Image (cartoon, rainbow, N blue to C red):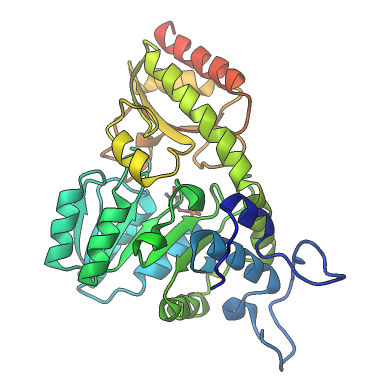
Amino acid sequence: MTKNKFRPETIAVRAGRPHGPGQPLNPPIVAASNFRQGGELEYSRGDGTETVAALETAVGELEGGWAVAFASGMAAISAVFDGLPAGATVVAPDDCYQGVAAVLTEGAQRLGWRVTRLATDDGEPWLRAIEAGADLLWLESPSNPMMAVADVPRICAAAEAAGVVVAVDNTFATPLLQRPLDHGAGYSVHSATKFIGGHSDLLGGVVVTADPRWRDDLRRRQTIGGATIGSLEAFLALRGLRTLPVRLARSQASAADLALRLAKHPAVTSVRYPGLTTDPGYPVAKRCLSGPGAVLSFETAGSTEALDRALSGLDVVTVATSLGAVESTIERRARLEGQEHVPPTLVRLSVGCEHVDDLWADLAGMLERLVEP
Ligand SMILES: Cc1ncc(COP(=O)(O)O)c(C=O)c1O
């Protein structure tokens, strides 16, 4: 693990580059599964490649730990859960990415995991769960799609003192807004498909840990599970990471602006964005995050059919399921399986890098269609 003296904006640009005279500025895309014996790398399923190592170095330096890259966010998440024994006690949020909810359901059914689901934004039950003992606490903050914010520093500190392992899905916050390992989390997990990649052109995932034994365990999961990231995807993710600070700054500023405008619109019944002073997550976000991020959710008046029709007329904002990219995306989340707790007309908006006035004109037009179909 390399301690980096620079600020995150500088680390994002510099980390993981080849060094020395005559070296390329960017790591090569090493298209190889097999390596001549006698060197450090033998087979890329377990050893990765120079390109994968560059991505791992950069994300590791941003998060303050060792990073192990996987073929998707779900592969990264599964690598953490794969370490749990049968009968494990797991505490997880009531609102989280539905893929994690599916892992929990399967773990309970196949392996007898005792799973407790708690509200992300209510710290006390988490502290009681830590006292009671658990094999793993899973946090996701801000949460997808309800935008609830957890008191990550407080929960992690209590868990560390009690010897309970915490994993934080840091996808929405990115390493720029939250560094869970600094607070004692065992793992910080990302879907690199989202903000790290930032261009909707790759699948990838990363787990970061400050414990060398857990890093070795993750490598073993990578070797045995085989969900290693490919060199092209690693290259794209690293290229995306270089501009994460500027993309996020712009997207976050636009998200804050749009949240305010949406909150005033008569067709919008509620907005969830931890940057709004009226949001229940605002005080915790102010204390725990370096910024509220670029994702928000809002609910609209009227039927889901009317909303789906209005959404289909959007032009600048793309109706699509993923998030964290330069292009803004929007989705009515309750249409998906595993989102039964989500209000039917809640839409999640991931704000990209377009001009905020073009985004607002598009969204305002959509809301007008709701009011006057
Ligand atoms: C918060 C969060 N974590 C994990 C994932 C899963 O990542 P991937 O789609 O890269 O497997 C997603 C995907 O939407 C997500 O939103």
